[in-house]
Length: 317
Image 1: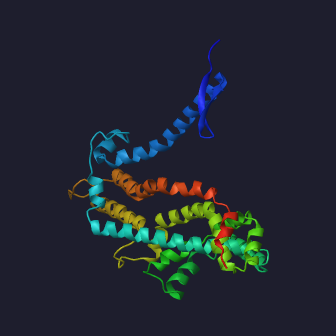
Image 2: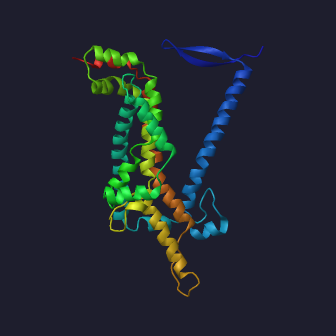
Image 3: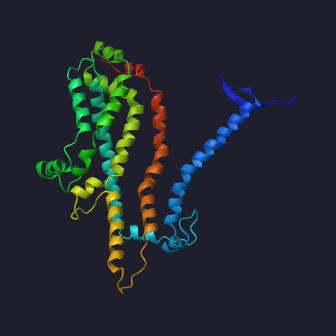
């Protein structure tokens, strides 16, 4: 009789072997292959972007995009970092806006979601209706532009980028639904112990919201990191340092304008990259986020094991 394969599993600090049937081996092997192929499909597009960013513009025109550059060149990155002060300043501005905006946004959204699910908050239905209603209907771009530039006088300041992205109706609803799953008895026990509303929120509710904070924080951070639209509306050339995405957008536009201005003329200029420059900007813009994600991912898993009842011991009156 053919001996069945075994696999070891931990059991009370020891390893206990279980037998695997041929069908189990087939399903496990098929799953590994399927996951590997899916991972490869996710990695290949980004690798294609990296390889194309290090190719020359001539090789791209001749052979198209390849998984390995036939003619290695760093000319596109040289153009991007020709003025390193501007690039470093754009990175610092974007990082500052992302960190500050994410922290403030999480604090406001978490408090809003907690207040809207409190049974003793009489105005919660009216406020939720206002949030839903404003998410369905918008006044348009012109009133928003006049509000930021004339009423609040925030043009050419970083506040014009920071404030519009702080809150989002969908994120508030998402946080409210998550907080609703936390037992209301935890709030009641905090009141019995004499804790105030903010202390109950800070020491009992907030530790249980780590999965939602990590998820919503990622949405807010990506919104700030990829922001360029509000920068184009409210920041002009007098700003020395502007967000990274808007800076890269201007670099691409300047190169394209220069190529178009000399097209059809007898002026000979150095060959300027077009496709490789776009790939290089994608690497510069997304690289830091991809490198940071593995370090942030652990908070998604760690937050799932945090219990609300554990926080009861934190209150000392």
